[in-house]
Image (tube, rainbow, N blue to C red):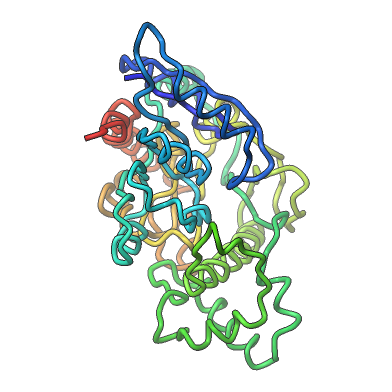
Length: 392
């Protein structure tokens, strides 16, 4: 199959294209920068020309991207060419584009709960697929590191703190009436302490009426001719992002009082108390090394993820790292708690789990070994990609 692969700054691209070619596909790469995700005449012309281009008489069979791009969907719809997108972000606001219903779309989401939500509102261009890793690359790296076993970190968190991004709730909070602000911040505080329940999605806790009241104070500049945002879903996701932001900072600073905790995050991020900030770690190089050389890796799921597993889960375990992750139901579907990884259900049990596994090295190593084997057997690109690329 001839695939037109649009390359942006996605960190998954190199592995994906390599395995596509290994599977026998002819991958044509398109690189082009534009300023807006939904409108650029120059990009549309370049994309159309690339989709028309033949090689040895063979046409392009489909376009492929990581994450969904409405502008690419629009062009593929116009030209009747299948467009495959595999989404790893959550939330991914381009999914609110009116282009999402185009019949040429094959949109794969890693979150069964989100797929169910879209199906419920009549969008049938989405389907479920877990994310994946390149087991060949990660096995070679972990095998090499195992020749000289040592640890560089006790406890590591590698991820985004979201303090350097625009946060709608923070910019709205100062304008809210005191009773409204108190109500939402009380729910968000309660949400931080449980990983099992989605309090923010529960209409018995936050009614649609309360969301509408909050909506009156939020200022969005949405292109209504191109996007069809469900305000209820949008605002609940904004609240969940705020919980994620506060949760990561508070948990890490509290854990840093008890353990030697190292942080890898984006440059120019906030300074956390009791935590050693080691800067960024690139996906293909430093990151798997960090996971492998940490006694314990922490994963805090984005609160906007309803049931699914973030890519970070597979990245850590595929690198041979030991993982403690906050709960999502799909973790328990694929993995066994205490055998492949360790799952925590509330913030109170997290320090105890860390303390236990720091003191039980052989048990920790065996869990990491089993976890890596499970990831390689279920979530390798060579297993997942053939299903993603089916066009029938």
